Image (cartoon, rainbow, N blue to C red):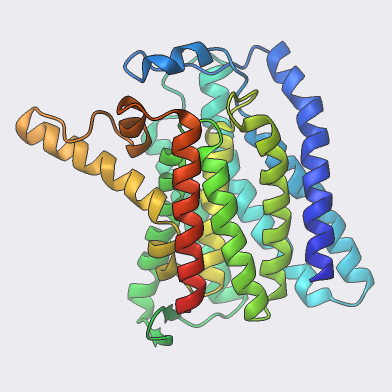
Length: 326
């Protein structure tokens, strides 16, 4: 617990320092947010706010995890140290896909960004690489924990592999869709990852609790600049990174099914988009005032801070429930 606390604090401080350095650079490079004309009108004033802020989280993770690796190796905890780097690399891989998308949109001024098919292929390649790492390098079995009944089930390998890949792709896209209001995606993700860190501690999976502590600290530091009114947005660089972190840890703990509960807000955000599109194609009408779900509440009169607070509290309650039923 002492190690995790130290890493969290170090990560938090590093993230704040990097934010102070990087945000002015992003402003200077004019890497500003491009708001949709069909989005909430209140968001138009955010036009030009620096984005790609996810690189603050990525650099923080690289620096702190490297420091943790050196410390753990020096203190004879080589096994834990060696398992940190693959989780870091996988997470950076997802963040890199988002960075390429942001870079094309904001620096190269290609409004379409990375082609959806290319983005999906990139995410798929990284997802497959992680699943192969779990099965072939770490020699994980295909056991998956079922909450409530508190037991593991053995999935056939031909079911587990596509299931694990779908979990990763769904989670990264769900967190990406949740990123649309100042501080929403970062707040919700921080709570979910904290829940996973606690589970790592309860099940004595130190590499998870150490890695998660680093990410939590990085997000909390980033939140100092991302809360309303945001001075920086994370962009796809950050949202895909965090989605990758959440899914990677959940699979590592063999608890991907728990995400249905503790990550219900991102799940509902995704479902709102799917339902809206399907219903509109069929009837020409909309169920929600706007999708994803957080925009519906905005257009219903909720302030951004209220949406963030309510969604975060719901996530916190769901995470407490999740800890009770594991």
